[in-house]
Length: 46
Image (cartoon, rainbow, N blue to C red; front, top):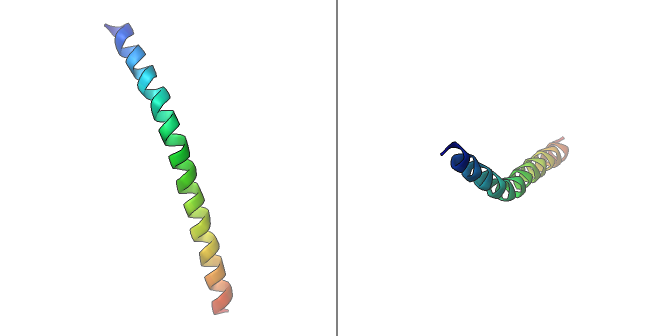
């Protein structure tokens, strides 16, 4: 029983990693873009 649950956990984790990593990279990229835009806006307002 425990071994079965462990295999399922590993299976889901390995699949989750494939989805999560690009998603996290996308979020980080969006944050960088927002920060860059804020800096640009500050540069224009000064």
